[in-house]
Length: 563
Image 1 (spheres, helix red, strand yellow):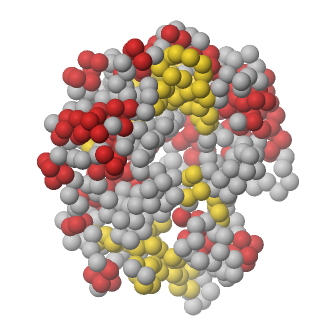
Image 2 (spheres, one colour):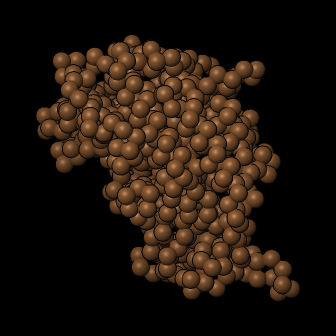
Image 3 (tube, one colour):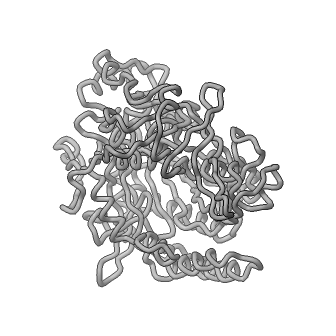
């Protein structure tokens, strides 16, 4: 799926190359960093870290330093050109390249766990879709004891950061995009409806509608909420779940380049004398000062490695950890914060015993079904970028603000389990409820996890948030289409822990994929639903031959589980 652009053949015109020159003014050298004092030291110049750095440094009296382990990748064509999404995965310049431990319930596979590396973090390697989570999922944070973490506040800030651009006439003429007037209009993050493979998206959206799924006018309105990639609608008085819609992308239509936290928040702040950014600086641990009277510890700085040398950097006010889901637990454990048994095993003296560090990892995975499209339909997928003539033609068009290299993502759908309408969907729902109740009775289970499971159970029963998301992705090399079924609320919980006392060793990432059998049941239901889509017009007439993956020989639930 992700091999659509032959990068070895990509030769950009000079006027495009000039646009993608590195922004060297943004970063500095280590001696300059060490020569100053800072109020705040931010660990990680990724999606969240750069937003915070920008906001804090708006006050000229506050000094901020950002330490980023990756490189300065701003204006790198790989992270700037929209249609190259997915190509960064596995590239060590842009992706940490983490892998999970062998997953016992997934045939002992080691799964890739991509995370963005470099300024902008994962906002430079994601698949460009601009989406908001469901209100019930955000409100759950407040229910679990975090005042102010609710949908109303979240939605207010989501509008504040966005600058939405209506679709261009070219895009609007090819596909019936709809949108309301409740989008952000003055934020720094640029969003729009990008060009997409509109012929396939039109087929799939009409097929979803023919299967009884609602076409949503605008999933971005204040009373319309949706998670991750697909859609969910909740109104003030009635609950309306389900939806198929076309997603906005984090793309600036003025330049047809990716809008990330680096371009949206760091570039405008690069001239501030109170903001300092150092790349290729890997933070090892947080340094503490102990109160002489036996009181609380105070975080006073960090140790980091740059060009093979170890340095220390202090902060007058706060150390902010924003190194991401995978690195934050490791840095905490390297600093002596975490579970006593984990720290003792790797030879680190506990400083603060905090048993939640690295625990309760909840990650979603997916299953796919692939079909070959009718070649007579002449779908404009990215397959033409596999050959020298096609990619050079695309590069020339891109220089003029045209062509396939501007492409973003397209149509998605979201469903609660009850609306899947497969023959055994209700039976699976009952099984999930029982497994959640049994999970709550696990000896030694944390009270906080029981509260989470209660919310997850309420969500499953109420249809306020869907359980499966469906993504349509045209493949390359030939005219293929792959339909993805993703978990939304996986029941399995995993861990991220340091495996040694070397901060530069990757941690053990063990999401316990499919440990809870209902997670597998949901994916099986997802595959069944996709197959029902393939037997519904107009999708039924859009593909040729047999199903490619999992394939026609994979018929029973047992067969699907074995894949």
